Each structure stands twice: as structure tokens, then as C-alpha cells.
Length: 302
Ligand code: R5P
Image 1 (tube, rainbow, N blue to C red):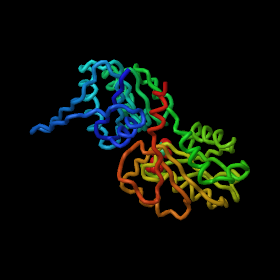
Image 2 (tube, rainbow, N blue to C red):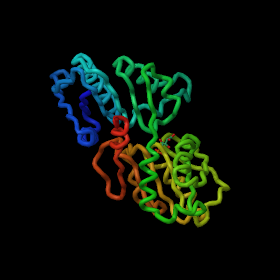
Image 3 (tube, rainbow, N blue to C red):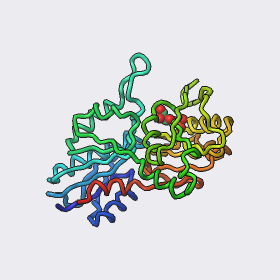
Image 4 (cartoon, rainbow, N blue to C red):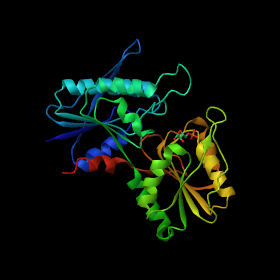
């Protein structure tokens, strides 16, 4: 069955790469903006009876990316696609997956309900913020780990260091990344995992409680799903270095890197930063980027 790969606006390089790797067509789209601010998105490529792969992170501006995506999906559906697989590498609103204070909406569930209306065959995301988000969907929802990308990366840069598991400690900077940290620990020859206790003294500020974990002279790899302000990783790195860690490396699946995240790059405590390209932005010097394309292509290997 013929395949075709689209992105609306968020993951264009990734869509091109996936199309190349699969040896299939890259879909063309048309976007019209009207005087009143309304938008129209449609496929310019023939999708009839094809397997359609759509890749679009709903990163900032999330509303615009989400709405354009919904329009493209409707156009593809009406074009008679055989199957539609929707990849949302970074799922915007995933951090609003519960009520923390009275009268708050569960915005993530609202987004899930909206996406259900597109009636695609499957939705796939990577390292989504909370594993139970899949239950918000009626559509089949797959949460794919990016562990293999980070495993290969650390194998290449740490070489012999990872052969002795006494050298390495995998660190979850809060309880939310526990499972992710264990996946990486298992992939790196069962390296031990520690979990730090994070608290937020104010919105967008992160601090950690003291920890009695032994990290002296160890290489610590902190694993998180999202780098937003960078506060979580700066605070966790400082704690580990204060406790005598030999070096601290950080990896995160989604580089949101909002305005005030520059401090992260200046932090002397951090030896290496690696992220995926789930959010396509201009690359920042000092950050290493891993492509998620092979993880998408893997799903279509016969
Ligand atoms: C929080 O629960 C997430 O897993 C991340 O730790 C958080 O979003 C990172 O945000 P920031 O970089 O602003 O500390």
C-alpha cells in the first residue's frame, strides 16, 4: 500500500526525513489565511487509498498548530485516505493532565476529546508527560519511548564508562520521570536509578529537597521529559554536583526551552545536554539533537 507523509507546520524536517527513509512521497499542503484571521488547510497531494502519516507536534503556539492539524486531517479524510496515522511527537497541554487547584479544567483531556473528533486510525506520541493520558482518548493511543535514541547516544559518548555500572547513576529529577529513568537505566546495562524530590516554591520555579543518594565521583545522567525553563535540571544538577558527582549530563525528550531557559546553557554544573527534535526550532549551540525519524520509520518496516 502506498504511503505519504505530511506535516502542517511543526515537524517539516522530520516529515521530509521520514518520507526519504520510507522512500515515499512527501505530501504537499496549501494554507490560506483570510482577511478575518480564519485559516484553511488542505492537502494538495492525492491521498486516496494511501496510508497517510501526519507528523505535527502541538508545541507553541499550541492552539494554532492544533487547529491547522485538525483542518488538514479533515481534508485528508475527505480525500479518501486508506489509513491515517497521526504522530504528535510533543503533545502540547500534556502537563495539564489533572486538577491541582479548585475549578481548574483538565485541559489535556479537552485536547484529547477534540483530537478524537478527527477519527484517525491511531495517535502516537513520544514520552508523553503522564502515561495515563492515553485513557483520555477513544482513539487508539500509543506512547512510544525514546530510550533507544538516548541509549545509543550515551554509548557513543561515554564509551567504556558505561561498561562499569558502578560509574553511572541515572537520575530522575522528580517522581514523574521515574519510569523513563528506569528504562534508560535498564538500557545502559542496568545502571542504578535514583529519584530526587522536587518541589515548586512558586510557578515556574523548581527546587529539590536534600537527598542521601550516593553520587560521589559518579557520572550522573538526569532524565526528564520536558525542558521548559530549565529550572528543574539546573536545580537537580546543582544538588548532584554539591554531593560530589564527577559530572552531570542531562537528557530530555522535548526541548520546549521557553524564553528564560538560557541559564541552563550557562550552568557550569552541566557537562552535556541532549534532546530530541520532537519540537523543531532553531538549533541552539551547546545542545545536541537526536532525530525521532527512525522511531517513526520503525513502525512501517514490513
Ligand atoms: C514536570 O513535571 C516535567 O516533567 C518537567 O520536569 C518540567 O516540565 C520541566 O520544567 P522546567 O524546565 O521549567 O523546570
